[in-house]
Amino acid sequence: MVLKTKKPFLEIKELTVGFGGQVVLDGVSLAADAGGIVCLLGRSGSGKTTFLRTLNRLNDEMGAVTKGSVNLFMDGRWCDILAPRTDLLNLRRKVGMVFQTPNLMPVSIAKNILVPLRLTSGLGKKQCRNRMHKVLEQTQLWQEVSHRLEDSALSLSGGQQQRLCLARCLALEPKILLLDEPTASLDFRAGRRIEELLIHLAKSYPMLVVSHSPAQAERLAQSAFVFESGKVVHKLDKASIYRHLLEECISGSAG
Ligand SMILES: Nc1ncnc2c1ncn2[C@@H]1O[C@H](COP(=O)(O)OP(=O)(O)OP(=O)(O)O)[C@@H](O)[C@H]1O
Image (cartoon, rainbow, N blue to C red):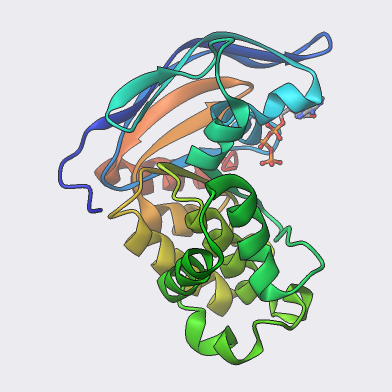
C-alpha cells in the first residue's frame, strides 16, 4: 500500500484527559494529514505521550478520564474510537505503537513476532512465518537475524531491538503508526537508521512521532504540533518547523 495523496487521518475535537484530579490534556483540537510524518513536539510533561496513548486508548488502562471526540480514518471510514462499543484489542492492532525503550518479550526473536500474530490474526503456521519474513525484510532485519531467529530477542543490540518492535507492530498490519521518541535510547548511528526506516514507512502508513530533537524533527516531519501544558499551541508546516525550533532554542524553551 502506498499513500498517494494527503488525506486527513486524524480529527480531534476538545480532547481532555485527566488522571485523578490532574488535567493532562486540556481541550486539544487538531486535524492531521497522512502522506508524511507528523511530529509531536514540546517540553517534557507537556502531554505528548498521553496524547499518543489516547489514540489506541492505552490511557484507559491507567485510569484516565477522557472527554471529547477522537476520530481516526481506517479501512476506508472514520472511526469514533472513544465510542463505548470500540473493540480495544482490534483498535490496538490497527493503531500500532512503538515505545521509547524497546519492550520485547524475553523469548526468541521469532516468538516476539509469531506469538502476538498467532493470537490475533487466525493465520496458520506457514502464513505467520511468511508474514514474519516480510516484516523482518521491511525493517531491514532479515539479513541480520535470519540465521538466529531462535536466539533471545534480548541478545540483539538496542537498535535491532527497536527495529524488532517495529516489525512486531507491522506484522499485525496496522493502519496507523505511533512512535514515542523511538530513537531516544539509541546511539546516533542506530537512531539515524530508524529515522531512514520511518521516512520509508511513512510512504505507506500515516505516522505520528514524538521527538525531543529539533534536528530530528526537521529531518523527519512534514508537519508538527507543538504541545505546551496540555494544549496544542502551534501547528507547523515543513517550511516553518526549523524556524520555529530555532526561535525556541534561542529563547531557551525548546522541548
Ligand atoms: N498514568 C498516569 N498517571 C498519572 N499521571 C500521568 C500518567 N501519565 C502521564 N501523567 C502525567 O501527565 C503529564 C504529561 O505526561 P506525558 O508523559 O504525557 O508528557 P510528555 O510530554 O510525553 O513528557 P516527556 O517528553 O517527558 O515524555 C505529566 O505530568 C505526567 O506526570
